[in-house]
Length: 131
Image (cartoon, rainbow, N blue to C red; front, side, top):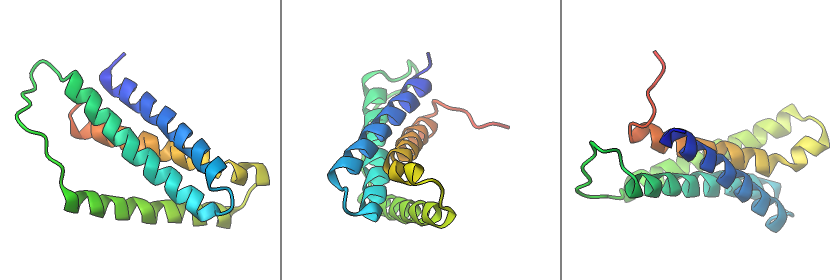
């Protein structure tokens, strides 16, 4: 199994876990559930993917320094919050069975976790874009 597949699989599992936690702990506020599920899953999956890469980098990778850009992280978080609110509003607008909307935090958490892990895998060169 490739590193990217492991990373994305962990991202999906993290996303489902974050969605479940938000579904149970923030049960009175659906918008807060959606936003927290996406943001927490995206953030945790990104961190886990990066840490996995640091512990087992490819043979040709030279790790000289690890940096964290506060401005880039704040901008990315703002974009993810807006996207999560948009997905929440879109799912309200489309509607659907109440059972689907009740599990919306798990669905959005899975999307956020998978996106976070896949983005890190792509940026680290573990995944090649389709041409």
